[in-house]
Image 1 (cartoon, rainbow, N blue to C red):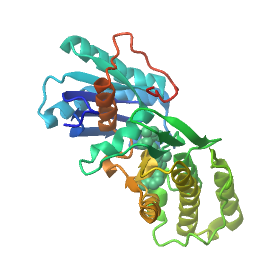
Image 2 (cartoon, rainbow, N blue to C red; image 1 turned 90 degrees about the vertical axis):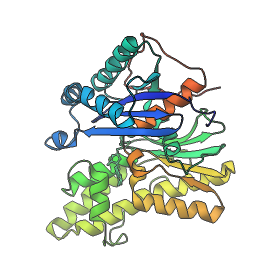
Image 3 (tube, helix red, strand yellow; image 1 turned 180 degrees about the horizontal axis):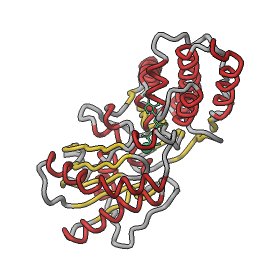
Image 4 (cartoon, protein in one colour; image 1 turned 45 degrees about the horizontal axis):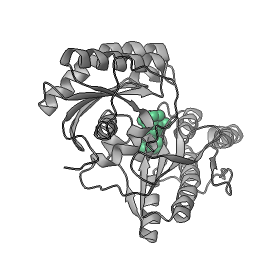
Length: 338
Ligand code: KG4
Ligand code: ZN
């Protein structure tokens, strides 16, 4: 048993964007991890439509929760963790209402979880990973690009963030310009296979400013290439060039933060952590420095409820708990302990 985590089964629910997800975790052990994606529906519009997302969560939430409980073989969890910020308010409300109703019926505690704290705790879901502190964590998702210094578990100091687009948005917007559809990260990664990453010169913004990322210029640069090359554009080379530009921008600042804070442990989390080039480049840069690189298993990279369960389990073990007044919020700072 790891004292950082609550040693009882917890049901976790995540519905902040376009995935309805439920999971059961016990301590740091993931007993089930069910995700119902709305991607097909949102593909028609090229992005997430908030009203449609909330409605789809209403349809999916009960069967997804039931499946998570069935797979785990648990019919009465001891607490419920639910994402209550940041995210689409209508979408979050569906998860929060379900969590509070079940907590009331089962007479068990409920705990609200910040979505990004969920991502930060996600490497713990791999039983072979031991995250050490102090640590630097790179959070890269569709809405966030942040470098976070964690001196102790639960304490978060944001040391760099994006001025404009998130890394995931750079992939999503680039994919749209290349006609590769939504969501873009996986599509760009697949199109980039065999492509020449040096074919098109794309910017690495703010190379010297360690506390800032910027990805909006990349989207404009990709648009220029598409306009200039017309039908002669090599989708594969442009996807590879874009992927390399995002990875270069992230890796250089992440490793500078590791060097500056002299940490022995680095974590890569968030949907973009599923990117193979990013994972491999960071693993090799960490290896050169003798630093442990903690990357979640693929199932815990993009949005899922297991990570919310892990963060909830961590918070409950630290003595935190919410009540029936638990509310949802479109944004909110990472909740730092201490
Ligand atoms: O964490 P996440 O599932 O949702 C948010 O919290 O935003 O991250 C979604 C982002 C999307 O922008 C998606 O394009 C990106 O993660 N993504 C990837 C890959 N898989 C997902 N980006 C690059 N390479 C991938 N393989
Ligand atoms: Zn996320």
